[in-house]
Amino acid sequence: MALRVTPLYKELSAEGRTPLEVYEKLKKGKHSFLLESINGTPKTARYSFIGIDPFIIFKSSGNEIELTYEGKRSLTRKDPLLKLRELLNNFKIERLKNLPPFFGGAVGFFSYDLVHVFENLPGKAKKDINIPDIYLILTDTVIAFDHLKNTITVIIIPAIRHLGFGYNTLTSGLLRDCKQDAEKKMEEIVNLINSPAAAQTSAVKEKKAKPVSNLTKEGYMSIVEKCKEYIAAGDIYQANLSQRLSAKIGSVKPVELYRRLREINPSPFSALIEFDDIALVSSSPERLIKLEGRDVETRPIAGTRPRGKTENEDKELRWELIANEKERAEHIMLIDLERNDIGRVCEYGSVNVDEFMTTEDYSHVIHIVSNIKGKLKKEKDCLDLIKAVFPGGTITGVPKIRCMEIIDELEPAARGLYTGSIGYISFAGDMDLNIIIRTFIIKNGYAHVQAGAGIVADSEPEREYYETLHKAEALLKVLEGI
Image: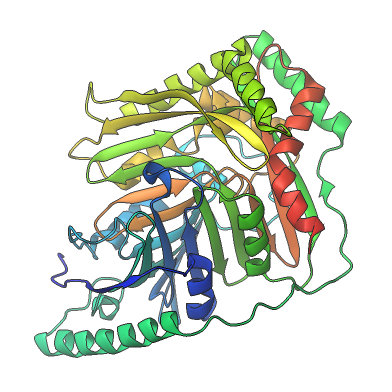
């Protein structure tokens, strides 16, 4: 059923305002989000989005699905991606040309372990953090920052929440009343945005445990050696192996961690997700997949060096990284994997690399990055695209399926959210998802940080161990400061 409503919107100046400041003014209840783009190019960091006041909550584990509408829960068993498609198809709205790519829709996360729904993998690793495979909220209220135009757009879609799960009907009288309610709500939001910022309170100082890894240094080096045996045997060419560090943070609020992380490690695919009993604080540098109209884009990162102490040191490290045969070979393998993944759902001949092996600087590391584009087939949609590319090749390996089997065998626990995705699917069917790296997963008073390294035939186990720590360094510094 096509929804015949039009978003209402109002544009404000963003001068002197930050997305985090506005988020803190507007946040209410147990479900809110900030998708923030910091320190990137217009291609990767033009927009930031704030969402509040959801009307539907979608959670799934395996084929068990929980839907909540206005406090009423319903349970069902079905392929979660099929159920999600069914749900989103009930709320189709065309995007107005002068609105940002996300104006309302589903926001949340897809965990790495979702892959078990559509790939026949062993799933032997222990699930020691109880995380849903999918956790999304549907919102009709979005505050969008356009960092290029320096504007804020407040967007409300009237009446959409009255459709329930998409099967209720709207009368002209109800639609008229909903528009009046939306105009009143918009005025309240604008007034809150224009109100003085509240004074920041210091994070609660508590005695906290230092981060503890689920692998010792020797343990990590041992699984690297085992992985190299699989490479030598011809099972795989490259695999990503990770360790998880966990620290007790007590009552420290996720927003406090996010505030410090965005200062230390500003990134183009940052996020603060606060859902019920779980929160994510992310400074991800990597896009998994973007869909706008039928234009597909993926942006793999592979190849890392720590930042130097001076600009000259950085310059030398960039040249060494880009000239390193191991790093180049690994990156090119992963480009080929990503091209193949999106090629499964894109038009023949449309997939091309439009940005090849550039370097990008972040607060603590330098990365090699490429960009791959394609044109989605007319009969495919964003959920077909997720199924084709998920999880990302840069954080699994080549070939992907065998690598995931080896990851399941060698890593001491199921990955859960690590190397899954955070992002949005709009009511128009557009999508932008990151890869969950450089991210705190916060649950039951603990913050979990996971980081990996790409293992190839000539990898040095000790060097790969320290690469995981370099990647986690910004997050570990945040923990030191609370």
